Image (cartoon, rainbow, N blue to C red; front, side, top):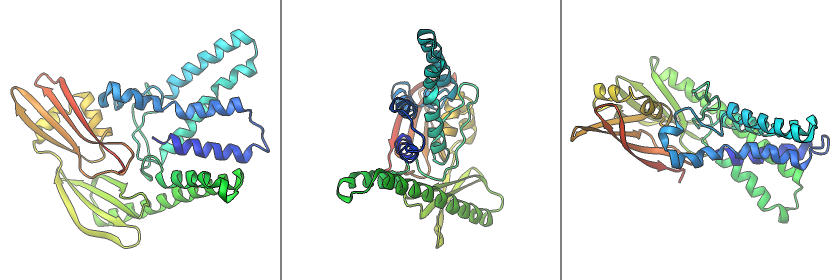
Length: 311
């Protein structure tokens, strides 16, 4: 979900270096293609479902799968043209994917760039998915370009400065919130710190202890806001652990939610498992709730997903 900000950022960088280092239009388009291709996994997500999306086997996000595909394209083009220099340019989409990875590194997205060899996800949780403020600012500058008479270089510089400042400020405030949380509760487990608004002025801090969540807002100037909110993470801990033995459900539980709550119901020899998010997120697309019909033989019979948005 970070393709837009990544496209804008790379476009602005190329616009600034274009006069010193000429980059042909075809090569630039290949870089942009590498940035856009990860959207293919979001398209597949609506057909294959959440169990696949969080299985760690993403296709278009994977450096291995994309690298294998583009290496085959390079080989075929070299056989056809016998021009190695022209063939190598087809590896440029991998640089676009690299830029996309850097943008995703600071965001809250759970993405798997190491498939199929590495099924983990690493990100810093500094900025909500989509980079709303920097994206809106850059698009606004391009919208008023005709009336403001700003040059492409000026727009590029301003957009990149705002993006850099936004990332730095997010990192500083999150570091401050993390230190405040460490002082508040010395022996905390599974601590998550997420932006509570797009301006990053407030952060939602969640502690986990004794099978319960404790959440409180942290303001970057005023400190802690209000009283902690408590919620039970499991209504039946033993049965929930049995359900989580299913690898697919466990990965959705770990990567599809930031602070998941599990509720279990027994009906007609089947388990009705509801996994919901403890605190609402402000990402463009996040899972609000998943209802899974789970058989006693540890199989997923049916699944229903409710999504949340930034709105």
